[in-house]
Length: 194
Image 1 (cartoon, rainbow, N blue to C red):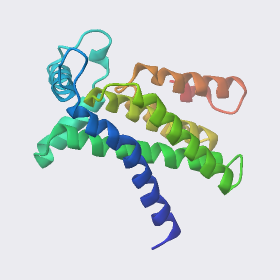
Image 2: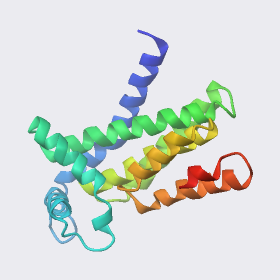
Image 3: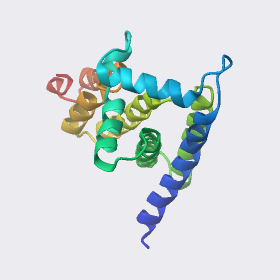
């Protein structure tokens, strides 16, 4: 097995290790007795119907990605959600590694990935499990991919990632701000901001 394939497999395994506790937590109850699985499914169905309250109606990419997976496989939406979160976290970790290698050596980049996964674990440990949180994983992957592409001065991928990521989180506008700062410093064309 090639080293890249082994590294990708390791990232997927580590990402699954970070995401899996959220899947197990679906069987826990809130303080008022509601099952997290039921709350998550209700939010998911409301999102698909366009019935979520502000600002959730804009954050639809995660729910529609799960719905597509559900249509293609017939699997439980929470299994699909867990698989997609794992892939998104592995992809963002890969981007963190590649970006970090432009600044530090491979060992430093591995430490950056370890810190990234640790912080992600900590951040999501305080959240109740929900399909809705897939939008956050999509945003993290999009942000990391956009920053890596910007570092490499590849502006079309930055624009495409910003557009796609905006359907998951409106904070994808940060990508446009990053590109605008790069254009202001003369390192990117202003047209990349559009």
